[in-house]
Length: 244
Ligand code: ADP
Ligand code: MG
Image (cartoon, rainbow, N blue to C red; front, side, top):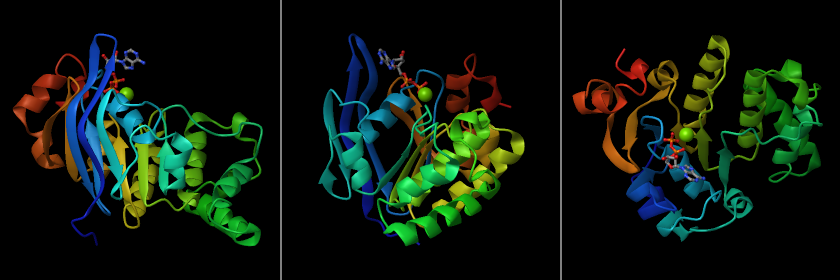
């Protein structure tokens, strides 16, 4: 399925906010086609690390490389243009447009008009929201919007997909569908998922990176992570659900 070539790496990545070191010297490597979950207690630096990958933040020092190219400090739109699909914590949709229009606009980056239409319909179908195609996105429920956003990301046919808390605020059935979608996406693209919903993580996670205090604390298969005492300890008092 995947070869050993890294598609995404960081080298000695550092992000400081004033006196706070939110990301502290992180060396990270993701293989082509790999699905990687990023875990860690609140404030561990997951979102800050994620934003350094997506161009939402310019790291204080260190490098980010995608497909061998140094993308450190690039604008988000340029990173998206390289074939990276990004779903940030704050939904990034055109509220006044329909779900279909949102997805089609993303598909248009890759395809001519007739094909983009077909792609958009296919993605809405795949994400289980074909029935919402004509609805105005701003009027949809939160979980539905999350699925529209995922359809929008996938319509760009990215080689790397970056998802920050995609299951946040989702109902159980939506979350299950999302898990299936992430697994299916990972057959065609490398995927990084930041998430603290443990029910969701258990369904999708394989090799997993745990952050703590801005640094990589552990990297191992999810079963090993879940039974790691030290990992449980860093969560204790912060997020009881991990130890459950
Ligand atoms: P996580 O996503 O793992 O919960 P974050 O990356 O959001 O953690 O935060 C890591 C640390 O960086 C926290 O101490 C947080 O308060 C701090 N931080 C994050 N963003 C900013 C910011 N824009 N300005 C100042 N401090 C920030
Ligand atoms: Mg976060």
